[in-house]
Each structure stands twice: as C-alpha cells, then as structure tokens.
Image (cartoon, rainbow, N blue to C red; front, side, top):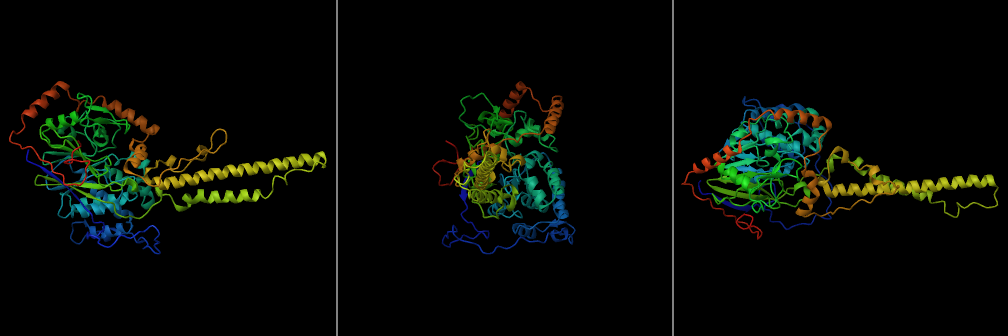
Length: 560
C-alpha cells in the first residue's frame, strides 16, 4: 500500500466568518442581552427554495442556511420535498458505497446544527470538497431537523460528491425514545417525521475509500467476513436489535483494545450498549487482512479530543482503527473537541474545532410554563403554611372548663388543622424536591433520560412507603468529560422495547434462522484469510503516521 501520512491541526477561530478574533476576552457572566432578534415567522416555500427556472430543481443552499441559522422553518411541502428528493438519491446508492480521495470524513452530529455549520467551514465548501458523514445526525441535540434538511439539501445539490451513511440513531426506535420525533412534531408535523424515517431506511451502511479505508458508523460483526457480506444485506428496513446490520451500527472496540489478555477472542457481548458486540484487535486485524484493507474508520463514541487512533497493524504499521467524533461540547456538558478527517494524496489530516454558540431550548423541548410549575408550587405551599401557622399551638389548646360536647368539637377541629398543616408541609417538601429535580435537569441537560415516562418527575416516586419525602440527589453544575460520560452511560444503551416490538422481533428472528445467506464456515473462512493475505501486493510500502499536536498523552496519535 502507498505510504500514508497523518497530521493533526487545531482550528482556533471561533467566529462564523472564519476570521481570527483578536479582540480581548470579555466576561459574559454578568452581562444581560436586552434584545434578541425574533426567529423568522415566514416559512420558506418550495418556490423560495428551489430554482425551477433552470429546470434542475436544485435547492438554494445559501438561503436555506441563513433561514435555518436564524431558527426559521419551512412549509411542510417544502420540507417534504427536500427529504423525499434526498431519499430518492439515497435509495439508488449501494449498501456499500465506493469512494475516492480526496475526501473529508465526519463523525456524529447529533442535532448540533450550529456546530455542523462550523464543521463545513473547517472542512471546506461542499462545492469543492467531497464529504462522507458516518451517521447519527439526529437526537440528543435540539436542532436535528435542521441538520437533516441541510444535509439532505447538500446531497441534492452535490449527489456525486456528498455522501451519507446510516448511524444507530437513524431509526424509529431511538428517535421515539429520544428527542427527534418530539422535535419534528413541535417544529413541523408527524408527516415530516415519517418522511425522515423512510429516508433513513435508504441510507447506505458502509463506505470504502480508495479500496483501503473501510468506513462505518459502529464497527464490525461476527457475521460479516468480507465486503460482499455487506453488499448482500437488505438495508431498506428498521435496523433489527441483532444480526450484521445491527452490529455495523452498534458495535464498539473492546475497552482494552490492542492490550487484550486473551489473544484468541474476537467478539464479546456489548454490555454497555445492551446489544451487539465488542470487537477485539484480532477481529479487526483479521478483517483487514482478509479484505486487503488499511484501516477501519468509525464514529459512534464521544472522544475528548475529537478522535482516537488505536493499535497499529503489524502488517502495515498503520492504525488498525480510528474513531472520529464531530459534535463539540457534546450535549453542552462534555467539554470535548470535535474532529474531522481529511484524506488526500496519502496524507490523513485530522482537524479539530470547538463548539459554536447556539440558541437555547429547555430540556426535552419542555415549555417554560411546565418547567416553572415546581417553582410556583413551592411558593404557593410556603404561603399556605404561613397562613395555617397563624394559629399557634397555644391557641389550639382548649379551655378545660368547657363542657364535654364543646371539648370533643374543639378536639376534632384541632386535629383537622394539624392534619392540614402536616399535609401542606409534606406537599411543600414534594414541590421542593420537584424544583431540585427541575434544576438537575437543567444542569444535566441532554444527559438526563429522555423517554416520555421520565421526562417529568413522578410525585409517587418522591414519597416512600412511610410517607416521607425522598431526597433528590444534587448533580454538579460543572462537568468534566469523564464525569459527563459517566452520567450519560444510561443513554448509550439500546432503549427498552415495547411488547409489540418484542413480538415483531421474535417473528423476524424466527424468519432469519432459515436464512443462511451470510453464514460462513470457520474453516473456509480461515482458508480465505490465508489466501487473501498471500495475494497482497509485496510492493506496498509501510505507511508512516505523523501527528502534529501538543498533547503529551498521545504519541504519534497512537495509544501507547
């Protein structure tokens, strides 16, 4: 294989114009913005977006970008036209698309539209730059539909130089559990969401660059031995929770990748995701040798510096695996950098960039009235307690000289008032706990579970069996990358399935047991590995890796 060089540069500009800001830093801690421009109320129509005069029907990207950047929206038919035109192009592509350098490879976006704009600024104009995005365009961030509309418009404008792969979040199961379906219903309609799901079903699963770089969202599968196994897959469906399609979208490298204690194991159950597998260095190395590849490039995992390179292959001396993550300050709490990979003339250049400012949404698209109820309720109960406390304990004591009937009546009234005070006091504690929960949601932001059942705190969960109010754990207001990753681990798992989905899974699984189209015999697989290894061109040079980055923890971009 030809010699390949890898370099890393860091983008320090933070302005949208691309010019370096040399003005002194200004603290915004106590700064108030008195006026903000209102989002456009006018929704762009098909006539506004598409240039029908030339007959090509290409979208006007500049106008779309400016409108979405200002939080503007489209008419439903205009949004559907972009999504459906993009779907038509994606459907015509192969499950494994073959591309050529030069190309820019990008990782997860996760609804961070304003960071997507910065990514394109760093990576180069799509008019002159070939792009490959490796999935996860939606969920977690609050501008997912904007990302879909703009990426699909770019696909329509540049169908032969702009490419999109499928991620594990491009499916109905996750978008219903997380935020994308809710976002579509709030900003548009459920018809737009359904159109997106049909388009997601058409996304290719993997890409091959210059017959050397295998690009996929998640990773490898024990049922995928050759590239032809991917080409044979039926991708036009909802990804199942098992099998090769699931593995390509969900699998991860094992935690001690390249330093495994057992050198014979290839795949382990992925307990972090709750599905698919962890793959080892041996699994990746065997796959690369069998298919005459140089490396695997994938996304799917947040990285502190935006990328990670793993152990080198003994045959090539090049990293066997690379992870690229393109969502900076993921969920507004990770404090991570983002990165893209540019490959051209045997040079792999990894470029980093930081997060861009963006408009604020309350967690899970909650409206301000719903969010403020715990605070209002707490103040109301405090007021009621103060009113009831006007009667002191001494005033509740009855005069012993009263007759028995009056004494019984006063006793009843006294007990009733005490019960009301205790009830209001308990309710005050509940509202205080709800207020703390709301504050925690703001601090956690996208880290909090986002299923419909957990979007609001259940009052019954705040009171234990003995009627005592449970204390709410206070979460930190400032996160490090490792802390955020720990809090977010629950959201990395495949969400639970409904009873109807479980029944459908069982039906599909029974049907799949009769399909042996991609099952290989182990002995023949080993023979194929040996034969393809012997077929390698002996004139290929060992690639060299050069990382120009001031980071003492990484030497030459490879984990030590």
